[in-house]
Length: 577
Image (cartoon, rainbow, N blue to C red; front, side, top):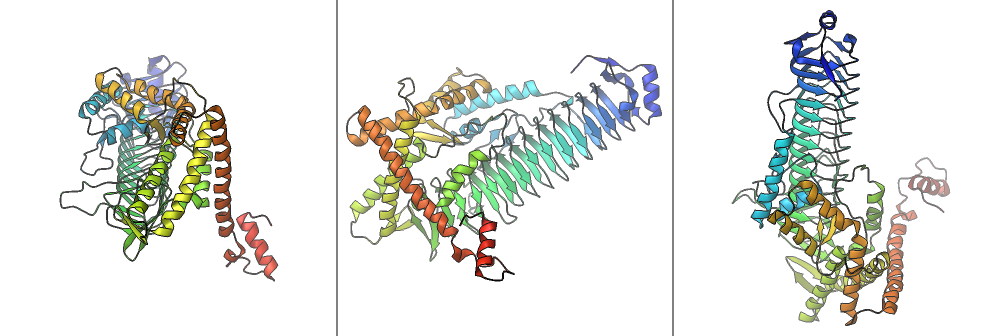
């Protein structure tokens, strides 16, 4: 904030003529270019600092610093009533309602650090080191004076208490904001109530949404009365109308329907259909159960999962499932209800245009500017490809155990033989496409060893080896700040393509039984391209079926003939003849 000064006697007199009052004008400090007409019919308590260009009308301000060019208009109370950390250090009981995975939030939190705090509870010394860093950071960020940054617009709000507000923030008609941080570019709208929370850059909380003990990540949107408690939302998540309690919503978690209920789970690149119910109904030992839906899962309308459960990446869930299945070994599957049982269709989603559309739309819909979370969008990657390789092994083991079976049992699900065979064909095509793409995209550099198992850390693909190295460095004290930890994840991401190339070359060598030659690597790229094209022909055919003339029912209501009806259908759907 620019140099501030005390008010002159003449300015105080002019301010009082303008309807302003203060408990002590001596505690109010203003910019050098201040003029009394900047304030009107307002009351000031405690320490108040007013930068250049600030306007305050019909409001009460207590213990606040207000940045250049900001408007405060018709605010019942913009006040800081005591020392606070503005949401930093608040514990959020994500995933487990009983707090077993409580995450301390802070105003530079990333999805990767949050994932580590939530998932690695079996490393208490590492967790303690992280929490100690966060506590220290919260102490540094604490103050008995609230802040509003530059060029903000705080209008028509009721209670804005113990808040640190960044630059270019809009608060328009909020009912209550207490003990929180609004980072740069956040927008908070009408009737919003938010307590003990942090909203990252570009986040939107609007239209009567209620937020308690939450982190709302960069460019996330909570809208239209959405209710969230004890939850984390990361990069570009968008939730409206429904309810979330104790969830870890990784990047691009989407829920738009009033009837959606998400409780005690982890999600990522997830879409909840109308009536979706991810619930925790087993209370004999308390609300301790959780479900995890790996990257790209989607719930059809009225889908239901009883925790605990684990769904493989890019799984489409339809119907009710109460048997606590684990399908993580079978990515790109359909999980459907048949006669009260859970039927698994391995790899079926690989032939669906819906997955292709999702994979293409996610990067196109990235609204972020800071990019605080590391997010990998690559369709072909070591994490999912590794799961497909395990799926092929599981399928072969099932068939070897009973070659003549018509139905196979797998972890509380059942699989038809025909589905198993089709899944094997689809997985093999996708594996070939993946290996070829990763070999082509990266370069051989022995500094970037991507061999071994890979993880998906809330949007970032990273090796087990590097993940554990980072955790060891946190535990040993070699990493002593959140910025240093974040830098480690970003350093890996900067060379992702070469790490993935290394992994694919290693896997190809294992398949061949020897280190791949340059010619064999080139062949793998060629085979991969052909496999990719074969998969796209399948997904394109699926798109054509979804756009067939047979589905033009209800179009062209007042059309004179069939041709007009079809023209209406094509125009609305954006289809070419």
